[in-house]
Structures are given as structure tokens and as C-alpha cells.
Length: 419
Ligand code: AMP
Image (cartoon, rainbow, N blue to C red; front, side):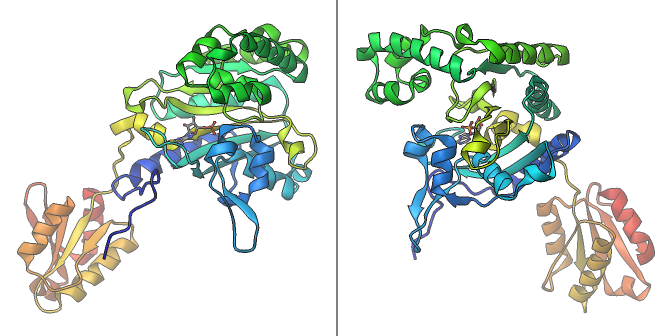
């Protein structure tokens, strides 16, 4: 029969790699826990309407990249392309705002986008994100941005710099949008077909286009900073003062665009500096989305959040994310009743927390020692008939080949010391 393979752009994470994932995930959980974030888990399948309303109809994600379909009952569903819209849906659905004025939620899980696969870009990828819901003040922005940096530092990535910008409020956004459209209309013939259309529906997205001629137009585009006025301007200035106070490395990136429509005011990204990432260097993206809770049917509630791409972090970390687990000990039963004896010893050792391998079928001591070698075992417990008669086992240290006979009562302590 022919073999089946995983879907293009979707990858198995094999046992060899999972320890690095565990390290990443536990570092993240521990860190965000220090700030009071609690985990939320939402379904991977959601009503399509959630992302159309939440992310925006004119975004690439919703227009081209969603796994959307009608199920057998005729419901229009989509695999989630990101985590925020789902978290906010759950927040509204369960009226979390009634229980706590400020909710701090985090998530880790797979997201799905039908993008062109490349290094660091997949169709199923994992995000670790955080949402701070219910705080409008610049101190909230500063805290969560600093938390993202601290996470990278906890992973040993200290050479990071936050790219920071603000999209302003409705007033400054409209003024900026007007200025952009005016400039781009003049150079319309240089824009690609997609961008000509974007100009009418979502001109900011032209700044994000990868086509060479569009980039040339974008390079000379006006800066959003020149249009920032009123509260949005003082919010941004205050955020920068906090980041300076914290010593959080950052720089203003006035032409940054994020791929989702829901952002207001603060937006930020951190780029990884490593050849391992190829062209996909953005490790984390985030910002404020003060209109999202109400767009999804909840009370007007200011919110800020971010999401890290875990595959990209692992690419960036390389071997640094290697972990050392407990080394195994193999229990080798030999002679009559060897398998039963080995199983008994293995059970007893596991009960006190030792990592133990043992076999299921009769085998010679020689072949069991070979297996121990292959497994990288640090020791072999030989449970033979003669030793058993004395209530003992033989412990072989695989590092130097030395062997000692021990009473069973002393075995666990010796094995623990080896691992
Ligand atoms: P976004 O939700 O687009 O702001 O993306 C947040 C982060 O998720 C990015 O900075 C990437 O690290 C990661 N990411 C987004 N899309 C992909 C993808 N297709 N494959 C791998 N990682 C991704």
C-alpha cells in the first residue's frame, strides 16, 4: 500500500525534538506566571465569522490564507489562523469582565494559515501569546512589551530590540491614511495589482507589500509619527518613557505594519537576528486592539497582546535549546524468570522516580548490554537468578564497566545518584 504523508506545510514534531519544545513552553509558562497570566485553551475550530470580524476582511489572512469550509451541517467554520480573536471571543462569551476588571490570559497552541511554505513559515505553526484585557494605560503596554523581552532573555537571547510604533486613534489614523493615499495615488502605476486594490480598501497594507516597485513607493511614504496627535501621542510618549525607565531595548519604526486590521495605538515587533531564520525574522508581533472586545459583542474594553512563533524561536535558539533529561538505567533480567524479575525491579525503581528501561522477552545478557549502549543508558541492573537468591542485584556502571553486587534495598539510592 502507498504511504500517506502529512499535509504540505504541516510537520510532525518527533520525540527527538519535543524536549526542546518542552523547554520553550515551560520557560514561557513560568515567565508569564510571574506576571499573573493564567492559561486559556480555546478550540482550534471557530465560526468563520469570528475571524472576518476580528481580523478584518481585507487582510491577507482572511482573504487568502484561511482554512475555511462548510461542515456537514452547513456551518461555516475556520481553523484559527491566530489566537487573539478566539481568546477575546471566549472572554466575551463567558463574561470574564464581570469577574475581574483586568484579565491576564495566555495561550500556547497551533495556528493554521495557508501561506507559501518557506523556512520559518508553515501552514500549521505554534504560537505562544498573551492578552492583557481591561487596561488602557501606557504602563500596561510597557509591562507586556517588557514581558516579551524578558521571555527572550530567559531563553538566553539578549541581543533583541523592540520595534515600536503607534497607529494612533481614529482621528490621526484618518489623517495618516489620507496622506498615504494622496502619495500613492500619484505613483499608482508603480504599484502591483494587489496594492492598487489595497489602496482603496486598506492603504496601510501597501507599506507591507513585498513587491520591489511597491517597496520603492513605500520607502518614501510619510511617517505615522508625524500624524500622531492628542491622547494617542501622549500615550506613545509615556510608553517610551516607561521602556526607557525599564531599560527595555527599543526603537521607533514608523512604517511598521501588522498583518491584522484590529490594531489601534501601540504596535510592536521583535526581529530575530540570525541567518537560521531566512526571510522570516519576526519572532513576535503584538499591539493594542482597543476596539476588538466590542467588535465581538462585549463591552468596550481596552486590550493589548502579543504572539510569539515557536518554530522561529527554536530556529533562532538552535542547539541552545537542548535539554538534559535524566539518563536511563536498563534493568536486564537473566536466566529463568528473568523478564518477571526485571519487571519487578523496574516497577520498584520507577515508583521512586527513576527513569528505567527494561525488556519484554528473554534475551542474553550480551544483547541487553548492547541495547543499553544504544539507549545511552548510564547503568545496567542485572537481575540474575543467583543474586535473586541472595536478595541482591548487580549494578554495572556503563561509564567505566565496573560492577558491584548490592542488596535490593540499596539499589534505588545508587541508581538515583547515577542519573
Ligand atoms: P502574527 O499573528 O501574524 O502577528 O504573527 C505572530 C508571530 O507568529 C510571528 O511573529 C511569527 O513568529 C509567527 N508566525 C506567523 N505566521 C507564521 C507562519 N506561517 N509560520 C510560522 N510562524 C508564523
